[in-house]
Amino acid sequence: MLHGVHVANQDMSDLRPISQKRVASFIVSIVLLLGLSLIGIGIFELREVRRTRQLLEETDKRYDFDRARLQLLTRDLKAADGTVGELSKDVAQASAAETARVAAEAKAPPGPFAGESSADWQRFAEMYPEVRQMLADVHRLQIERDMGLFYKQAGLTPEQISEYESKTIGLFDQNEALAPGPRFNTVAGQLPDDQLQAIFGQQGFQQYQDYNRMMDANGFAVNVQSMSGYAGAPLSTDQEQQLAQIVANNDSNYTGGKPLQLNAVNWANVEAQAQTLLSPAQWAAAQIILAKYQYYLGVGQARQNLANVSADK
Image (cartoon, rainbow, N blue to C red; front, top):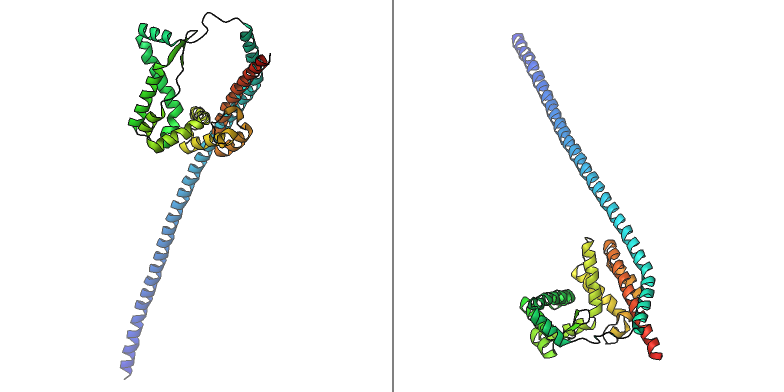
């Protein structure tokens, strides 16, 4: 009996080292797992740090680029402001000079060529046939400049545009005149209504009439579009149309159903409303065009004043 107990005790003592080994092995495994986890976390965090640093560097580069671009834009705006200021100062001087010139011409005796002659143009074109094509090319460019916005609004096809321009140029050629100087002067207006309806259709013809009624406002928008394009900030088609409508809506003639008159436009309202429509760079370009319009309107008003004075005498 004692012998059996001794054997059992011996077996138990043999098990203790085995259990301790397993525990130690288990602890080592846990330590290894924890170590690997910590290493994985460290690698992940390192990657995140590198990624964050890269994003910060890219952000810094974009910030530097945007700041440099803003500085260039600010410089351009200041230059444009200076140009507008110079143009505005010249308006009064130019208007006074034009007034004096017109007054001197009014007092001078008429020259040997008092009028314009269509017959002279025909003879000139026969002598120099290449001039007719050159003048036709000029007319086509002018038509495209003046009517380009209408082409977009009406959604004309290339065939409609080509037919309209060709017939209009033909009308101009038939009514061309050679004026003193010599210079060319087209005395024709526009194609007859039936021809325009045949080209554009009834709806397109109505759009054409509406466009013509605010032609000068459309011309203003086209000029701003060209100037803003030179400045690298071209107007969208919607902006161009809205700008023309702003000018038209500030003329009582147009809102009353009559053709627009530029000298009746409330240009102060136009400036305030246009500035909210345009970006800073576009507005700087628009100010240059506004100053030019003010100059030409001032000259025109001076001529009209002289004509009124002469009529009173």
